[in-house]
Length: 216
Image (cartoon, rainbow, N blue to C red; front, side, top):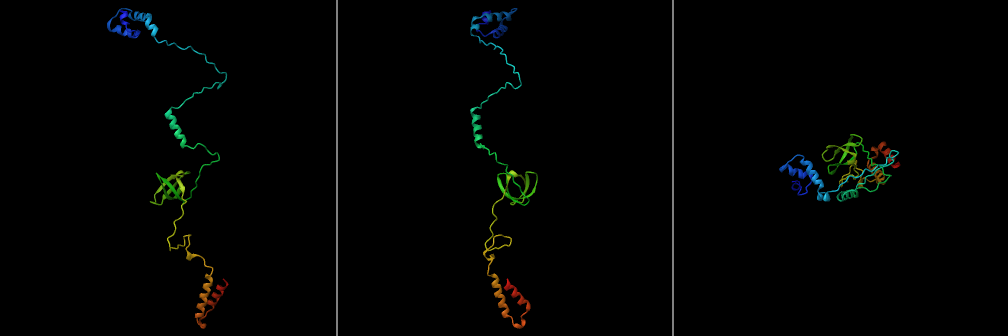
């Protein structure tokens, strides 16, 4: 019966499982184990896995006298992703470089990044150390932005309309240029007006004004 139970050389546990389904006698588990251990076929083809002997480890005399190091490598896909990320980054740094600081004052014309666009506006007030309140020129809305998203507006002022001379506009037209002979023209016109006046109507104030014009 033991030979029939162990006909497939399945091992001790499998032979016991087959015996439970069909047969029983006292001390059957011990008999099956002894028979399987004496089987020459099982002893030849069984896995010979032995425990490794314990190797003594040298105990260091001082702390941190022996340091262990684990070396890890990246897989091919992870290495490609890391190399692509490193190529986009800056590979060198200037030790003399300093952080870019911007100081804004109230009323300064700036450009602020709102979502994906840069919109022109002006500084309304300072919110915190690195943030300001900005009023946009397009819709007069107020936004709070960090200094990283604010730039000084260095665009030139719009040119004046042709033929329109404004006193507040720094750009002067040709008529506003200083003529060096303008005071002489004024003196000539003043003399002509005096000559047209009769002698009886000539007053002292007009003569004094002419004298001051000639001195100028």
